[in-house]
Structure formats: structure tokens, C-alpha cells
Image 1 (cartoon, rainbow, N blue to C red):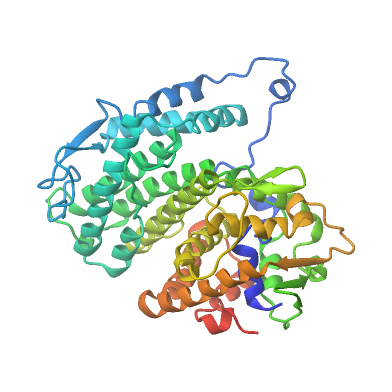
Image 2 (image 1 turned 90 degrees about the vertical axis):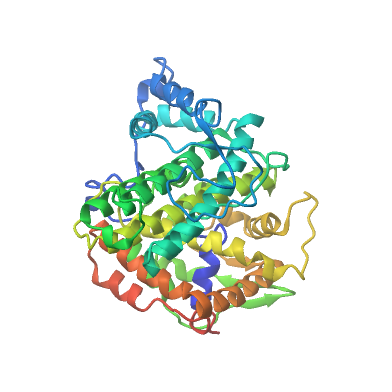
Length: 481
């Protein structure tokens, strides 16, 4: 199978390599809070579930962006403790989420962590975090995003280390105004507050109390402090995106290395669409594993089944994308400071080898979205009034309903269909990545970060190391026919 086939599977819903480590490793690693079991008494409604921790967390989060948790930023100062930030575009008296004190940060983390200790509490918390923010909160979130992006732009240049600077710059968030027709949820506010805290803590650590910013202050203790904040932010983003609810199974190494085998082009055309036979799946991860994973992955993306077709609203897409961006940026932040602090033997129980797969998916999903501008010249018809990004994902799933519903025949799984509209945008993604590789070494950075992430998990496997060493860093290798 050609390598482009693997990218096709990673970018849309068909991330069939979404599989983690074997059972003996899983038993020793928490894996970003995944794998939590249910409670038979609660599940059968024999007892009333205890949701006190979730309710306490919701109460804390509901105060974010309201009077008492905000501050005012002008075009002459910033509350992040770093000078030289260009805030000239801000309106006077812009309200923003204030970076929290250490005590308030600990209270927020503890309330969220306590609510994530059981499936019942987690479900209660995640449901409440879907609630829309008030206009006051939305205005504070909009102001925070503007200040946040200006601060990280300055910090990324002042840090004096290209690797750290690149990771810091990638924390950038999509900007908006309070009057834009978008929905900001309580979960969005939580992520924004945590990322604000993360950057503020990073500045504090990098300044070493001196007021100046510099990578020379990064030692193992500094790196660990920043890395811990970044991993917790990534953990919450993963919970909000729904990725942590999937029980990964199978063998990551054989699945990925099997799919990476470039044994030639087996595609065929049907009009503008292309089809790929799926009979090779049983030589890698197996059709049964795919049938188990696919409905959960579709749900994770926010795509819902309606009768015989699937639907996808712009808000569902934006929510998933925002959390994937927060997850990827936080992980890149953690990786960069792990390297800068020359750390080893991290042994953090929030990470396992499955984290690598989630990281690769977040990279591909966000990159697919970033490359969308390259495909504006084409159009895709949709009765749902969706933008092309949502409609393209929707077209892909509707063209592969047996996959999406987990009902492939295990003996004769048939073919995967690549709709022509999706292929058009996917080809544009190749052009985008080619430009980014030339200018920013995006694929080289991906390969290097993936290797560091595996080192951080403490997972050792020669096949995985070889696969990462051979990870293509040119478009020609990925898209070779």
C-alpha cells in the first residue's frame, strides 16, 4: 500500500492505526486517563451516582471570564509579565481572563482532576462543559485570545532558542470577537484559562525571577514544571475532544508498520472517485479491530448518524478542531521543554505509546484544516450549508458507511472510497505541506518530535524506532504512486 493511503486514513475519520500498546504495558500505564471502568451499581441505576466532584468543578469553571476572574489590558501594558508586546490593536480597557495565582491554578486543576476519577463524574463534567458561555464570558475569551497571541509572538522571539520559539509560536489560537456568530462553551473557557496559565507560568520559569527572558534559565526543574502544565492541558483537551473515551486495542507496531508497507498502488477509479481494497487489513490491524474502533472515532469527530446518512454541523467541527489544536500545541510545548531540559526517564503515567497515535492524528487533522485555503478554487455541494471542510469529512464518511458504522465483513471487507472532492483537497494539502517543509521544516519536525514523544513514554521497540527513522520528510515520498 502506498504511503499516501496511510495519510488518507489519518486525515479523515479512517484513522485505523488508532491502536495502543499491548495488555501488559496498558496495565502499568494510565494513558491520559483512558481505560476507566464503569460501576455496575451506577450503570444499572441501583444507586444514585455521586457527582459532587463534577458539580464542584463546574462551579469553579462557571466563574471563569466573569468579574473577579478577569483583568483589563490596554495597548501599553500586559499582565503576562513580559515587555515589548505589541498590543496597539487592542481597544482601550479590553477585558481578558487573568492568569491565575498558583493557589487558584491548583484549585482549578484539583477540581477538574477529581471530576475525572470515574466515568460517571467525567460524563457529568463533559456534559456541563458543553453549555454555552455567557456574552460576558465570550467577550473576555475574545480579548484573551488577542492578548494571548500577541504575547506568544513576542515570547517566541525573545526566548532565544529556535526549538522552544517554534513550539511557543504554535500555541497561537484562532481569533474572534464577542459578536461573531460562533458558540463558545464552558469547555472552551476552561482550555483558554489553562493555556493562559501555561504561557504565564512559562514566562515566570524562563525569567527566573529576573524579569528577562532566556532559554539559558531552562534546567531540569524548570523543564519539569512547564512540562507538567503542558501535559495536564493536553489531557483536558483530549477529554473534551472525546479521544480519551476510546479503548484502544491491538498492536500499534504491527498495525502501523504493516500499513506503512509501500507495496504498490491497488487503487481503481469509479468516475471521479477512487477505491482502495481493504483485504490487506487482516495482515496489519485486522478488520475486527477496525469495526470496533470506527464508530467511536466517528463520534469523537462530532459526526452523527441520522437515518441512513451522517450529519456534521459547523459547531461540532469547530469544537473538535479547537481541542485538537490545544492538544497538539500543548504536546509540542511539553516535547520542546523535555528536550531543552535534557530530561530522561520521565515515567509520566499520563502517557503511553498510544499517545503517539493521538499526536499524529492531531497533527494531520489540524494540518488538513490549515491547508484548506489551498483548495478554495474547487467547490463541494452540500444541502446542509456547511463549509467545505465539514462537508468534505461528511462526504468521506457517507461514501464509506460500512466502515463508519463498524459493519465491514471480516472475510470480505470490500473497498474504501475516496470521493473526488476529498482527493482534490487532499492533493492541495500536499502542496501546502511541501511549502511548509521548505519554509518551516514541518515534516522533519514531525519526525523528530514523534521520536522524542516515544522516548518520553519510555516505550522501547526496534520496529517502532525503525518506522520513525524512516518516516518520510518529503512530499514525494508520501505521495509516491
